[in-house]
Amino acid sequence: MPIDDIPAPAHDASITPEPDDRAVDPIEPAGPTESIAPAAAEAAPAPGPSDDEIRANLVEASIAEYEGNCPCPYHTMSNGRRCGARSAYSRGGGDAPLCYAHDVTSDMIQQQRATSQ
Image 1 (spheres, rainbow, N blue to C red):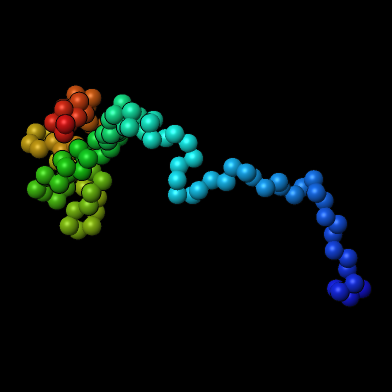
Image 2: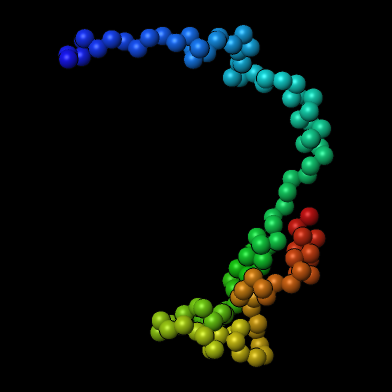
């Protein structure tokens, strides 16, 4: 059967959407958002960093402040080997950088929040 001989499907009015009398202008807001938005903006202050973000920032800053090659066990020495037990973190005394998120205490997080406000 040639393509020209295939009948067009019958038009089913039940599946054709009715025109919507409530056309929405894509530039203008659909409702009274102007009276709601300013009150909501005043009520909710801008959220600060999460505890996990603060932990990550404190660990990163602590490592950056360390002047040697091996602040943490997972770093590598100049010969390419892992620092492991030779790291400042693993050795007693001297510098003790924050290397892991669990090293950051809740007091440190609170102090960071207080100083950043």
